[in-house]
Image 1 (cartoon, rainbow, N blue to C red):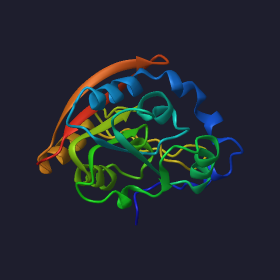
Image 2 (tube, rainbow, N blue to C red):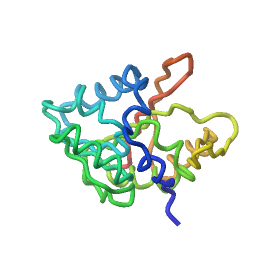
Image 3 (cartoon, rainbow, N blue to C red):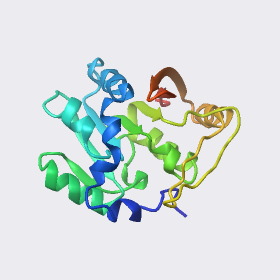
Image 4 (tube, one colour):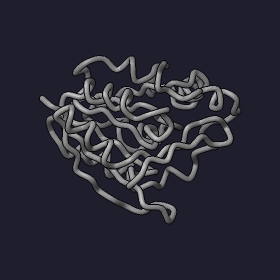
Length: 195
């Protein structure tokens, strides 16, 4: 069974981007972009779950970095192709990332919506040659809290010790930057895969 959440929710919305308008000002987005743009060895980036395409619009379009987005919701991809026709986006999931296919793999507020973090994070580690960036809006905590919201979408907070142990098992380590957004502590993890 795939760890991917049900995507039907996004496909039912007339304007999927309207659901995420407050996120445009999230400082974690800029922190993530700087991790890539300040590193001359990062030449290709994949973003899984690009939402309304804010990162493409604000950081990647016109940059020196080759960008691609993978989105699980056909409705969201159709919306992006309609509103941002120059954005390189395709329907797919973590399973479609490939091995060592990108210098950097990036997710923002996506792992919390998986049925578990291991499968998705494993695919990210395999896909990235240099770095994986994970922005958590529900950063891992002392205990695992698995929840499903009213739309049937997981909204999980994983146990920090479990995530760190998984990374160590895969020869990876994380640098953690905390920040505040909308009164909530969030984190950007820069993970360096084994390599």
